[in-house]
Length: 308
Figure: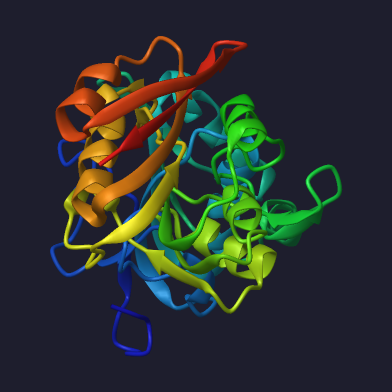
């Protein structure tokens, strides 16, 4: 759904707990992390009557979202912004006040909830939007945006995989492709004919489109866990799977990535995986693949090669 219909006036960003926010049934879903959702950036200024937000944990990302939300609301429009107290919730009221708002704050179920009616005059919005928007970062020589996994540095797991990844060939996929760092290394091999980059974060897909710039690359905004990816008989898959969901460790995430990789590979196809050393991926790897080999282990990370 998009905001091409001028009658749309209520929206929700993220997935606020239903017991803490009474989201209208017809509210338009906004989120970079829910494939198919509309973009908050595309909402016309002063067009919404109501917006409910589960605010992100990161400071730069959260201020960016709050600023975009206030820009999207008409004067007098109602904003409800909430987050767990220890994941940015304790800062929301102060951040909204810095934009010229007077929020009412309450606490429920370990969350802080700020409610306000948008004032006529707002301050400092463009600064927050500029800081949280897409930008080029010199230390990575890539386009990036706050909120994307490891948006301002090369994470050690990917670095270890890059150091041990041989030249690949044929058709492949990068599961959880992020900014496209692994994809660029894979596509350095001229024997790679096609590479599908998949990430649940729309912003990552948009940045990877800028960073990769290779006609062999296909970019998709999708949830790998949901299946239905339409990938079959691939020659290889590379991945650095996530293991956090909503701030909590969830080992099932990586296990589902392994399952989807096995489904997408041809017999004899190869998976290259990097992960934190403590994550118990050996059992699902051995269950889904004929041969599994530990190729590297250093600095709290490990790299596996698994043959279908």
